[in-house]
Length: 430
Image 1 (cartoon, rainbow, N blue to C red):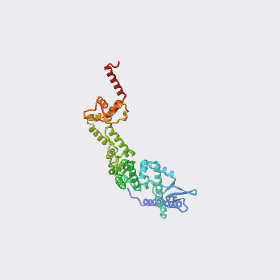
Image 2: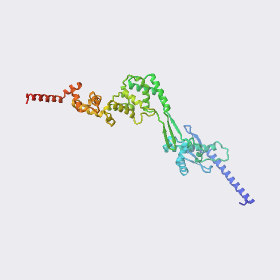
Image 3: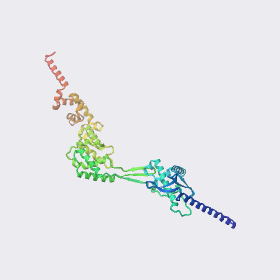
């Protein structure tokens, strides 16, 4: 490129000087304009609202209204916008550049949007976040002048440029993790163990039981934390708090030493899932011909409880299997039937029905633990159950049922028929 001649260099210098003077003149004019707008008689200022929050305001018709400082791209010019105008402008600009979601994410990272509102993309919260951020931006830009009024020129940053200078409190590689804990106070734990003990055995909880219950609950709550990790708009929760089953398990552990020699029938008065499972287990045992009182059922159920939720997978499966094995040992003669899915109660119901009809008594008054039903089921240890003919013979002759049989209509008719046969054989009746 050929070197400039002396005349060309002189002309270029003159042109540069003109541009400099124009820039200085504009800067001076801008400062005058700023002084006019922000001076004692100006219409723009930063004020505190009744709640002590600073905001950028404009005098208008004798009142002050909240407005927003909108710098132009050249960094010197600016305009003033209402809230609605500002929201529309910044959302439109976001759509044209990185997108609405990029703006939402940036505002979340800077703390203008809460995690729950960011996760569910709450639009009202998004608008409020833009308003809060725009207010901070407006005040920061305006204070470049109001706090430094003697400068010859001022350079303002656009809203997008201002956001880019702010450091996020959240790094993309380290998603935010909130750890939540439970904490139950002493008064509540005392009330809980008191209610548990009273419902169970009808007496008050001791000081030692209250102390122990509070200690264990506090220890387990400290371990049973729940962590919520947020990455983008996705939340992942790990861990779990203590639940109803856990508190029942802890209370059961605390009271267990004092239950020796008590029937524990008060368990039937307790509400909740555990009490229902105890009732379920007692009913299940009955179906398999195993007597299980409330205390035993209580022990079975609570032994299946573990920290954080409770019963083994497939609630009560382990306990029910134990009962089935007991039933097979007790009714070894029908063990193959039990393995095949037949419950002892199914067989017992047939014997109960026959006994009810045979002795003319309601069969629903006869359960699987009835002495005659038990003999029929066990069949003296012989394979299978007692035959129906043997069962009827037993009901006719056993001391406890013989009198009942003789009092039935069928027995009387049979006796009358037998007597008539005898009389006929002697020719005493026709």
